[in-house]
Length: 461
Picture 1: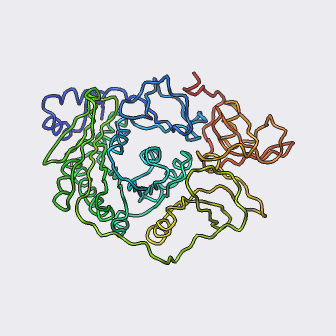
Picture 2: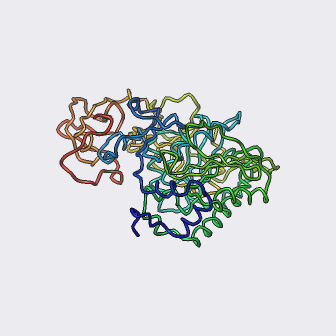
Picture 3: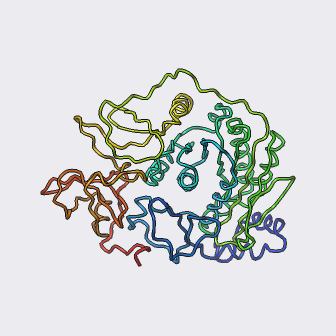
């Protein structure tokens, strides 16, 4: 299949002709244009994006002039920014419409690899709690990695089916369903996605999406919000799914204010508002999103008085490594020293009993012979009080060596644990033994790509 000659799937083109009769040619032609590279910054870490073109619907999103080598940028590894498609950052505008006056429990149901989850972590209050779920077990590690590098403390990672959450009646204030879809919105960025497209697959996706929505719907409390999104243009996977849901339960469609200059299509069908990003109109890929608020009465699960599982209190004095304005509950799991927000302790215990959790709590240290060894997760945490350790600023070449898990020579005469950084952003820990150093960067996260010539990161050029 040669996408350069506009040889897109015949049935896809025919549907686009019927769906957008006045602009289908511009639509199809735009699929051959180059994509615009974009990033979303972590405002708790990153301070270097002022010179970039801003993505208009996001406070954190920026366009890059060209695609850099992210692998050789220490700040990408440190969670200072996330490489994310621009249209999907419109999630931010949906969250701005949510009106809840108490700490929120948020579920990102289809979360891997973590683009929307890290975004949600930047959007919610530190008193809120995010459950980032991924049903496919092999995709869970990258979700854990990306959220850990992002550095917020108020998240849990789970690995459960939507039906399992449906048993948690009325527990969640917000549920985000970025549903698996036929991927039509990715054709420009990933032309190979067109090879996998078929009418049968779009119908299969629509059916699966309805199952996912139906199964998680009972977990949303009365007055709670559902954000539904896909990266497809297919009405069967978008507004038709929401029309179907309205026949199953009661909700109101919440408008999302948009600026005319954004060129976002606002549609309304049977009182349901949706927002479409079309490739010939926006500097982004195809995307659909809708925000609804549940109005039907939903029973609410009660937290048990007694739990089968308990959090084990630490057997060692907790160091003053975390500075946070909210109360924290420290606990010990095997040899790991962890904490969670104290407000969510009972909810966490409930989740431990009801669903399969892949990561609970922020691990700040490993307990070994009455010593606490600081962890990589501590180094990445945005609330880390990093003045507790000697800090060594690395050059670009040193930082890449550290991220390759090579031993580096430090310009430091302070033995013991040293925190290494690049551009004043923490990268991790080394132990300075005087004559040599031990590199404690996680082996599974190390840079494997070889190359003697290291290009300057985009923010240094």
